[in-house]
Length: 128
Ligand SMILES: [Zn+2]
Image (cartoon, rainbow, N blue to C red):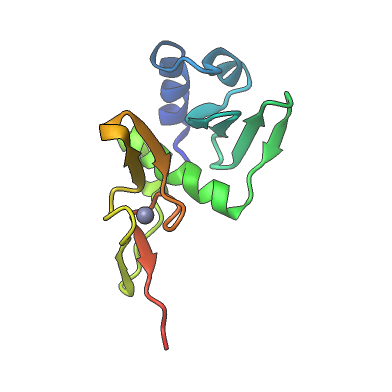
């Protein structure tokens, strides 16, 4: 859940702050929080995540995509930090991305979401 006034302000600001899909997102009262090749992750005021795919339709997010959208929303908009998944006590820094949440290639030119931690930067510790 996002405070109504805060969400309205973020929607109004995204038209000037975002490029990809920002106008359509604002028309539908959705906040763009992340974009990959062919998919735009959108958040509504209740915290639901929709994905705008290249096929022209909006699709509900599955659990993994929802988490990714929340992590990116929390990183992009400090006011949405509360959406960041809580790191459990039994977790360790992701060994693959070293806690960054992204994999960086070509001296920083290319970046990708870390698939091992779904961009959280931590992974749960497996219990024996
Ligand atoms: Zn990782």
